[in-house]
Length: 172
Image 1 (spheres, one colour):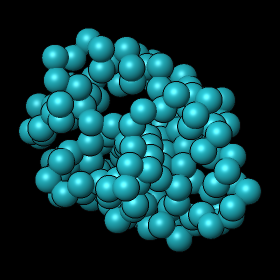
Image 2: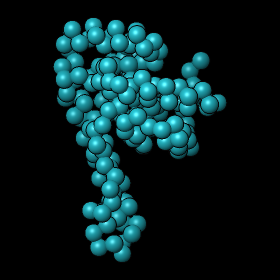
Image 3: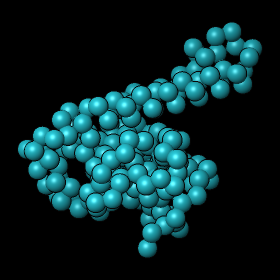
């Protein structure tokens, strides 16, 4: 996970604290829908999963885009920490996700040695389709990725698997 300064003055990802990071562009039609689904899932949980947001734009230092981003966050009433990333950290993040998919494919292929070309036939890929909901463990490794606007059950399923795989502290 890239080390990013967040809107609250802290780091977006705090080592040792697993969290859900939603990656999107500002003004993306799907982003408010994902927030709505995340909110529904969080309200149903006894211990909500910590959430952060990464807004991707080609140049993270573009002052006009930063002003637009702040206005967008205010309009949405976004209360979780957020950060803006440029192309280089975004590409680094997508590389991490693609490497994760490659490792998963190899593990699945080993699990089925009878399949002559199992690794090539296993289709789990990172498509880079916004918004991207990424569940990171406390070490910053991605455990689950849900792309696009998920159905509530998809996010519930990923959140429950995530909660079972990691522990986190809920800040009061």
